[in-house]
Image (tube, rainbow over all chains, first blue to last red; front, side, top):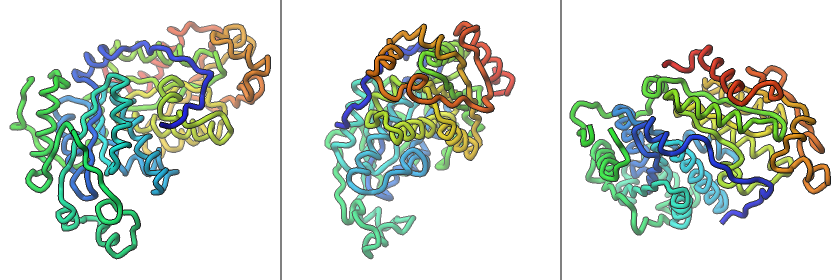
Length: 205
Length: 205
């Protein structure tokens, strides 16, 4: 747990409540947390889902390496502390988006259970749905895809602490959804998440 | 439309573009950055504006001390470096919200020009509107209000580096909007911002 430093502030309620946002957006805000090995297909599925949601009149937004690592988290590196802080901030930002009524999709390896569980915890405390989605693919499959040549670099020792090669990936024990990345197309995978969102009553049109 | 299936939609793997969000939300995403002394009325006006926007069918969300200091920025204190990082992160998160199509209202003292200008810069780089709103009130008026008794504590030396008492406040040189907090009710002030948003073509219904 990160220590709370600021003390001279008080809590007060915003003037717009969650029901107002739900009515406006015809959906409940939630975080859809994609996790999996590098090149497992997380971002492709997340963006496919985002597109399908927006096309159906729902507001969704993907947080991924591109808009986080170059902005909010550009002062973080890849040390264990920085990786932890990286995921902590992403969890907090996703919670803000979900609180605003958005279906926030996060697409990060997020290899450690403790970090993902912390993100889950702050959502639970705020009464917001947290949907952990394991994008399951073997290291062999991911390494075969390797669109950015990262596995190759990791095997050559050019990338240190690379998840799946030289750093561990801890699979979720009880994810809400498991997507078999080797068997499903991105469209089929996104459809599975969409069906789950419907089933949970998060989409009201 | 509850169990709509993916028969008449196309599937995309790329990013949703800004035009799609604009069409969906009937607004352009933007950041409305409130700045001013403690107790100048920033949050009251921001929440009044948020309420007015949502009531009119627009999606707005307030980022303020309550949802930021206890979450994303709970590992920051009040040292100069931490204050700078506080505002930097808020600027980055507001930019993400604006990029998602939301009218993000930030309500922080944000006393330094250089920090606000940095937030403005990252919005400009992303092609997103940044509307700086100075909530103008004299230290005397703010101190008279002092709902949380903070000025009293600052005068007693219990709060160090308190903006307006023992730390400087740098007024914006060219804010988009100046609200005279002594003369306007929160509703009148919010209306002035609303008129500005309309005038800029950010609200399309």
